[in-house]
Length: 399
Image (cartoon, rainbow, N blue to C red; front, side, top):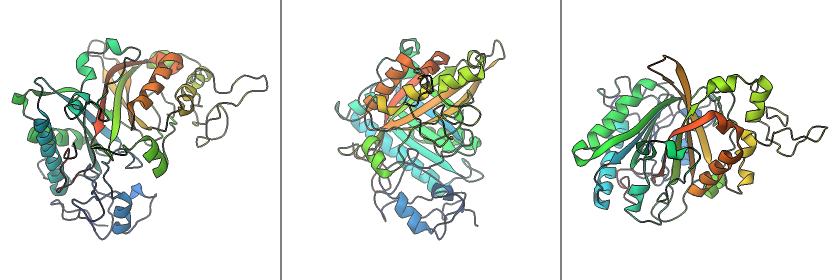
């Protein structure tokens, strides 16, 4: 199989075959045959098989940014950046800035300049969003205009760590490209003299796993319930109409994890906190890692097999009567400079078309999830993931 040319000539709308080293980015074509093209890694369709590019591109064609339901197996490494302003801009300023960001992303993924990506892009995903303050410049009733409510511990988070007016997610299988790509996009578009700065950033790692499932830093499979077809995505994730149509609302929360306290529990106690067996990921209600959690299953003595305060019960969508969110998590580790001790953390990401869907779930977890005993929120941001864009329809032009 051939490698894509450095100048991007191999990354066209209808390349002859889909190559393993390809680019994923936020400018999905607005319709089949329109605008910039998207080349995607072949693992996005099914394991190990090759598909003619037109079929694959037709499957991917649409107005959505990548990084929500595609790729099916998220890249292993991610750098999240939340930028904020000190002097409130006008709507025209934000729209112009978004257009510049979009053009820079297109220039980057189509040209893959050697000074930024000397070895080529590999599997690279770039996603752009705007926070509630920026959304409200265009209308207080727009999706994404609402801010997150006060969750348990939110008042203890530094206000700067709860902000984000421009949000950039860069994900790749090669961690060495995260910082150069982020720096290139921001340096080409963000003027510090105009009052913009980075509020907070977090680089994180996602271990090997299938689809949305992987092990968390605490060692258990997350086992999240996520949409698995276009109907579920339309119901719970994609915004259906208005200026933000085909976008979605993202939430990112960062947690410090008390690994020592969790590890001090017995194996059975740890499994009870999660609701799954650590050894194989199977729910305590029985079956395998792929089995649905049976929240009604009981032991012969009448006790629920999934404890009342287990994470999989507290986070289950059936209790909030909410549609399914697209959820995933990344882990990270930070070293305390004073003690030299490494502390694990979790970067949680969800996408939904109604912020209340996430908020109801998190408030329920605050109230009854034993896992929250071992997790302390240290940063959080909600944002509108803008609709897809291309050369003819700039990023943010629908606002």
